[in-house]
Length: 380
Image 1 (cartoon, rainbow, N blue to C red):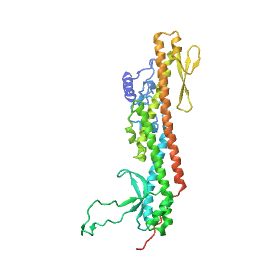
Image 2 (spheres, rainbow, N blue to C red; image 1 turned 180 degrees about the vertical axis):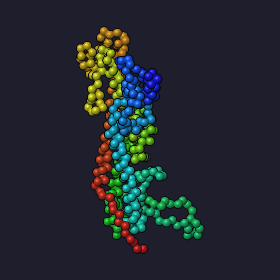
Image 3 (spheres, rainbow, N blue to C red; image 1 turned 90 degrees about the vertical axis):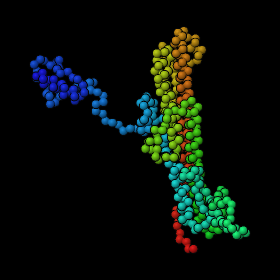
Image 4 (tube, rainbow, N blue to C red; image 1 turned 135 degrees about the vertical axis):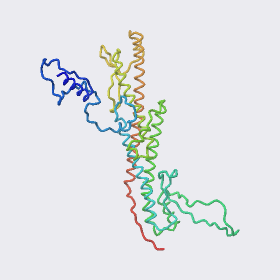
């Protein structure tokens, strides 16, 4: 019987990774042993946590972005959720506008006869995204033969186009006349509204995103720390949709949000540490979900104060250690609340700017409909 019991103990130990007692002290002596084909389920406390059966939850957006970071206590992870959504919306809208800029030029060339008046996409860098659509006039083919010296003409090769300063419909009408397109005036003028809407909407989105990035970067530099590294965000699957469009803004917003979350965590830790002091920190929700207002509560009387003056602390009969601890807690609390207020304000201003830019771009693009392709056959 002892051999059967020892074998059952070894089998259960291999199965659950824990050494279990071979005999139940409450069972009377001489009772039959437990069945070896169906072992008794041990206590859950003796099973390692790694072998407990749990259903894995799908990872959240923040967990995907911070998968390479070490585990640490976090505050509300939805602090920059609205700003991240606006960044994605502006970046995708800006990309659609730039794609339509290239398509507008192709449509114009396909619907018009060969002429010197053309639409051309200007880029700030070679291979970069389209920046602005310009009306240009193609230059005549240069004559490389000098009729005076009867030799090849030297000198610098002229540019093959000239950018026209067109601001109004009148300017475009003059350009149509001087380039010999009076018969196609109505077709050329149909591109004016869409050309103007694309240029304005792209300029508004690009300028707003650049201004928001500068504001967030200035806050990081003024805080004395660049924040955590955000290079791991580039590996997120959603970043491929804004590749080259708003990556810097997204990374800086994440860094400022992480610093603000650190302030929230520090305030909660400070409230826990002041429970042993005469005055305790009580955190209350402010104007929004992530704002915090601080109230100092006296432990004995229960009275609440919005702030504590240094003169009040010195007038109380405290020991030097407790007085120094209260001064340190008051100073730390003021700094954390001020830093949290500034960073939340920067994030909200960036979100408000992106929202206004997105609404303005949608309004401009909604006023005009895309120009349809009207390809015609021309006889030469």
